[in-house]
Length: 154
Image 1: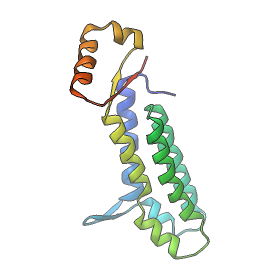
Image 2 (image 1 turned 60 degrees about the horizontal axis):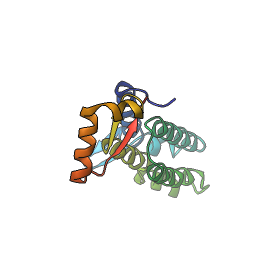
Image 3 (image 1 turned 90 degrees about the horizontal axis):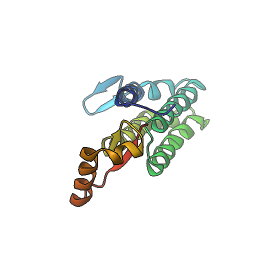
């Protein structure tokens, strides 16, 4: 379930980037884009199914990448609002809102930022603490105020 290597984390990143692009930017017109989330919103039932499925997949990837609680809550809130718009029984307003509200992209970006700010160590905590090179790297980050999380994959 959890990512156990940098290769697994790379797969998580690639899949999150794919969902982000597919959901909110299949067709781009300048700075604006429309993706499957906006397109399926026009089809009753299908929009909600796609939105909830993609949201669940993004949350699963966040758990696999061991995202922090704040990131998970942030993603959950954004994806919840995105899903609720598909469940409102007004024919036009939710579909237009869903096309403009790029919730999957926002949630994906939150996860990708969290991954960028995290130092992943391939091994257990005891191994990392015993590794003088890694220890020196962590001490340097503490001294300079790096403000990064450390996640041990082992």
